[in-house]
Image 1 (cartoon, rainbow, N blue to C red):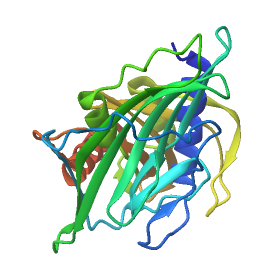
Image 2 (cartoon, rainbow, N blue to C red):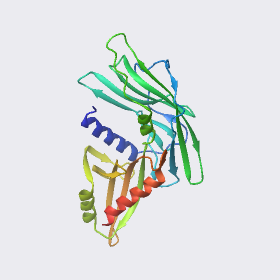
Image 3 (tube, one colour):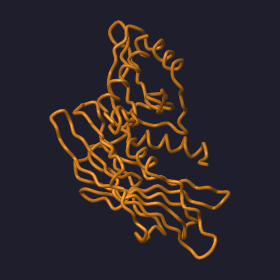
Image 4 (cartoon, rainbow, N blue to C red):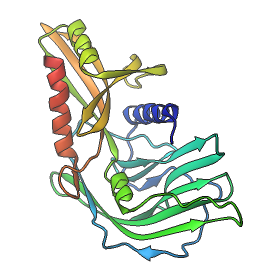
Length: 281
């Protein structure tokens, strides 16, 4: 099991990386590096092209904030990005790793691995993708193509991780985007802040985070549920005219809005409605 500490730390780092992002171009970028001991063969590879594809739809919306490139992220195209993750299981001296590797202009590999720093076992999926650019935004369609499992070493081999087609679909369907928008409210800043504190869960940051544009200092963020997924966000609230203005930056996690499709246009609309409701109530 992953520790609660790791999950919270990962959430914080992912959140800060997303909302502190800088602009990137449309070129494919892979900042995550392969890990030691992960150079495995494709022996035993099987085809899985009959697995249902995943379609991501991202609208042309100026509120979408560009993702920052880091050594622990793989950017497939523009705002479509995935985090490379490492979990240390101290009691068993195991490393649980998830990587998006071998990125090309139309394919990549999703690699889940358990190892002791040298030998291990894992599952690798080959995934092809294509990008379309309708007038409303752009779409990325993922199609799993191959799968292979492996075990290394002579004795005491790690069990092959439980990672199947449905698990892969869950990963491909859940990239995160940062979205920023403003809400005007007739209530004062203290009332709106109290409403967010009452309506959402809040998490204290382990250290102050300085917003890179305004220099404003934050020491906590909020969490609300959107279609069963945690939506993390920061709300900057200012006096404005006869009420207040809330400037909200939210991290929206992808989830299927219809079978096989993740429409971020729909998710953004629902996120705005949810958070506007808190700010104006």
